[in-house]
Image (spheres, rainbow, N blue to C red):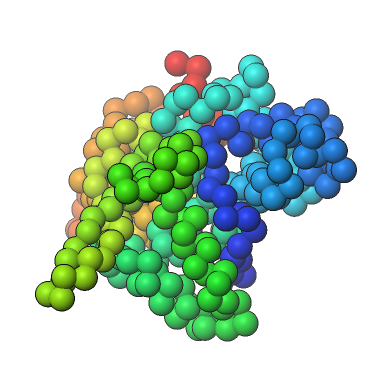
Length: 294
């Protein structure tokens, strides 16, 4: 993966649960984020307008001209698939696009790269990892303040506030879009000097609450062709294994569900080679449609 690294833009705000619909409705009505009255029409402060704009780009819900994408138009209109994000499958879908769109590099780097190096990390660990990657790939991108801000927002997007957070912080943070998928854990560790460190866990598990259709959509979106190796599904760049932190058992289970469905999918295991086969072309949007309309 050699795409240009990109950091900041969120104005220190996490992506709130109601922001995608608010932003997409605003654009569908013919408005632009650069309009002088955007603050009034969106009902938020200037920095929040910038943040909503950023998250729509980061999640891939708008194109380069800031028009809603096909996915956004399917989900967020009042008659869309899931305009108020009540289905956990939609949250997994948006998480997938946040990681793979690569408009906010920290998400792609953590799930594709850091997760292969370690199963937990402190904020300092993550900072050092990002610094190493950027120095190797794009040295002039490194900025300590920017990285600390990105790390703070990343953690707050996925980890529920601790009990010692302030009341205002708790009320604000519990409306984060990605908290309900419970993807990243938190634990505290005390060293011999009684110093307490906070670790964030990125361990792989079965992820049983990912719908098979969202799993399949994510495979199809990677354009593998009519077959893909199990190894690629587990650990390839932007693979379902990496993006969703699914372990091998969880991927096997999802494959079994797909093979048992009417998608023309088979799974072969011979001479140590495990391969997922597609007997016919599948349309990823139609897969989503079948999920939401069932």
